[in-house]
Length: 111
Image (cartoon, rainbow, N blue to C red; front, side, top):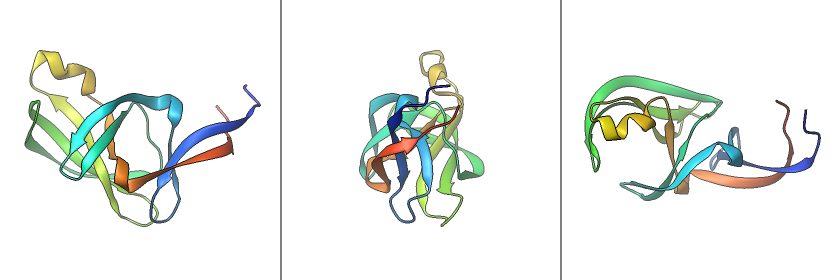
């Protein structure tokens, strides 16, 4: 176990519930209708809505909206299925909109 203090995490902008670790970022070059977004390999303290097919910039995907489990605010979406082979790496990952999360430092993280 790493016992260093100073890990960076991302939290809900509204209620500050922890959502993910900086180390779980897969890509910072995603776009949402509200601007930049980050693709995360793992998130916590979220609830997903019903799955639906959605036409996105990179093609048709089966996605589910993601909300904060504490305050319920919309944060982004989860890729449940990618129909194009080149997009399969997104399956199971979550996009959080940059304007909906805040970066916080100094957290003790237990694995």
